[in-house]
Length: 251
Image (cartoon, rainbow, N blue to C red):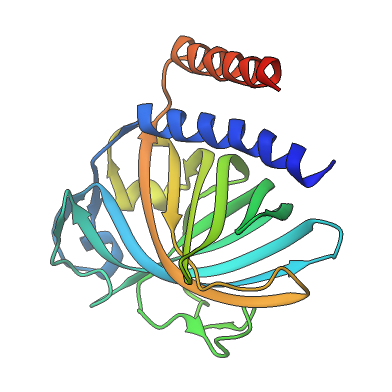
């Protein structure tokens, strides 16, 4: 597939992703910090912020594989950061993976995941880390950690790196579908019930070349949302198909 054709397809995918996430109902959630650290209170938030390290490898044929290790250090409710035990008495971290297509058009580098997923863990001892910040697999201190939940299905997603007036702007927005809690996760994430959600993960990254193996770092946020009604998704999809048809007629 030529790059220009791929970018047009990507534009429709990105439009659907933006509409889908924009129409999603991001929800507040409550965690029981006494389960995490042996003491603490219930904390209600709507977002978790953190940072990550990612290894991304390009095969020279427009494909990439990626894996990342993210640590979450702060709950937010609206624009307010919350004072809690997170990153003080215990921590949360996640592992991500994705495979997909990468390319460039003009001054825009882009990547789209075809498959991917993530796991989120509770580290009650607050001691899990990478022993080598350039090696995503060098996780240490995780012997007692608990898997809280996971998703093995990537939804709408897009990452871009754009250079404007000499400044590089990066951003990514990934949806992970069918996030499910483990039994341990049910004791930490206590609301809403049932807790079967989608997860939106977004943030930025250090710019990198689309060649060989690269290590990049950035900020990341995670929010939970409910899936729009099927009829709503269908209307958005039909609208975007109409947009694509109009573009073809103009061409």
